[in-house]
Image (cartoon, rainbow, N blue to C red; front, top):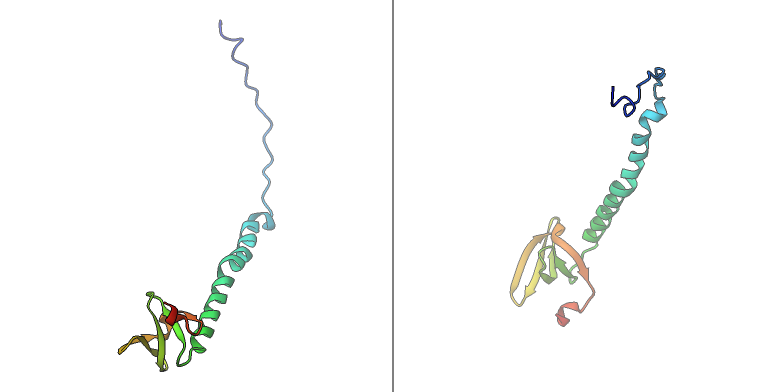
Length: 112
């Protein structure tokens, strides 16, 4: 035929030997991912929760705080779960302790 020189003949190759992966080869991605998730996701989240809990327990009357919604005020009374915050003259708001985002240094509210 005319195009025989363009088409090379296909020769059968020897059958490849089937190699079954070992236990380590099969599970190495899982072995690597577990510590990676622990150090990148779980450990930092636990540290953040511990810091937030310590901050909530250390709140005291007279502390100046910023709430999660952005309101800033001074703590006037503390209960087991709730705080009373003085936002302005005669404006008292009762919020949960978990709503406190951060504690401000003393005297910060006067500068705002």
